[in-house]
Amino acid sequence: MKGRWRQWLVAGIVVTLLVLAYEGTVDEYGHQYTQQALKRALVTFAVARGLNAVISVAQGTEVSIEPAGVGVNFAPGQILDPINDLIEWFSWVVLMAATSLGIQELLLTIFSARTFAWLLIAVAVAWGLMVRSKRWHDHPLRALSARLLLLLLVVRFSVPLMALASEGLYSAFMSERYASSQQSIQSVTVKIGEINRSAESAARAPEDESLLGTAKRLYQSTVDTLDVGSYVERYQTAAADVSEQVINLIVVFVVQTLLLPLLFLWGVVQLARRLMQVELMPRRRE
Image (cartoon, rainbow, N blue to C red):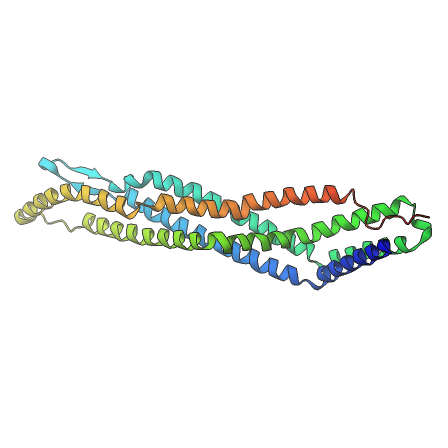
């Protein structure tokens, strides 16, 4: 009696998984969550490139002064060079994350295809017929079909379940960190852009060759000498915590799109190895 109940339980689980594989509800959620994560990655990549652009402008904007009549050019934006290097690396991390999500989306599309579902059904039917037929009880194909069915089921549901787990982890622990850091970087981009426009306006001051214009330039040169330190301080203030925010975003994307998939893949491999040693329905004792 115990063996019969086990057979009915195993058959019920297999049928339920086949229905889910064909019906595709789990895949719809997997696609939805993967696309949301991919959209976040692409938006973040655009934000990172935007900050990189304004920093590059800041590094190329020169403030000209003439202390003691000698022309000297300063680029106060060069103070942002370490941050610019960090943004470059961050852009690569986000690009890798987007690539990882694109691969997951492709795998979801492949494994959720009707062809794969029919393959699962065909293997399940073949296995079921062998289980019910006494002729196949001791045949090697019976055990092979059972292991193949288990392997196909693991492969079929691994990617959508990984997407669900990844989005659940993000929503529970990383969404607030992501939103706060993203907003901070956008704010820094706006502030540095404003400083750039101020420096560019000063650099484009109209030339006046009159005596009064010369006196004005000497006065402005003295003011600019003081303003160079002001520009440096404004750039430092604007980008004070940008490194911390970038690191926060790197942690989010590495954990969600690189570390978690690798851990999930390792778990799937370990599960598949154990399932290959399991017999779904043991042979009945005579």
